[in-house]
Length: 309
Ligand SMILES: [Fe+2]
Image (cartoon, rainbow, N blue to C red; front, top):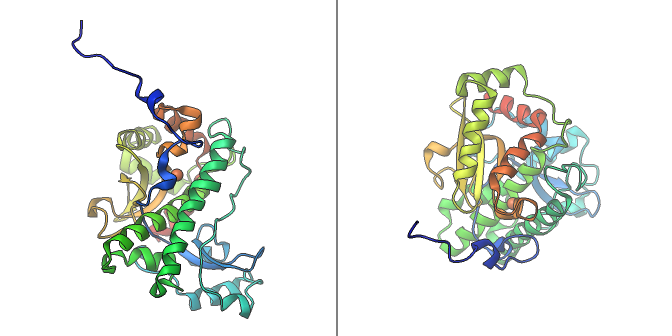
């Protein structure tokens, strides 16, 4: 008989708030990336979103160095006008201080079921993601030098932020905003996400041997990520690679994450408990396995080709 025994079920003893985990109150975690300035038609507010969300930004997404700001406000406005996608960008709206806002999901809350349930999506998107944005906006409001900066300029400039507490806030809240915006886009209802293109499939075969081998490597990274974090498929030096980051760090965070993890995200999986606990409880591997059913390969393919351009 073993000398060891489980004193109590640790999961039952945890007092998780409605929605899963205590991350809403956390102030850590981070990243940055391709973002663009947009005007939300509904309320005329300015906001920044990953280019995958900002349709007007898509044409210029590729062939960019992810570690560098892609657009300043002026250049993006030009792009938006050219694309006819910023009809709501009135001079009055443009004059407002920049603030980030929650991007709409590109599908219904229940569209990813049964793999990701509607309640999890509702809380994850409406509460957790919103909290990152709210906290980021608070930091901007309290620091004039941040006003008007793009998301990538804020988070990409983290090493230059002298105030450690502020740097941590920007890293975590900015990262949370970028990562979740990316996450919604990289998923699609089962059967609607298409398949990897011939080019992407060939790159997967070259890097991993097969799609199954990619999934095996990715699942292992996602499963072994201790605590909260993300698993990623990235393009690094024109090759695909699987990496994992802690908290809200991501592969775009040069000088924040190890150089070995730096690259352009093609896929990303949130393995924070808030992403799966309601439905899967402690069975993270089941959530990871189910997630492959809702991967948006069309979106992944666009990101892959942009990174390879
Ligand atoms: Fe999350």
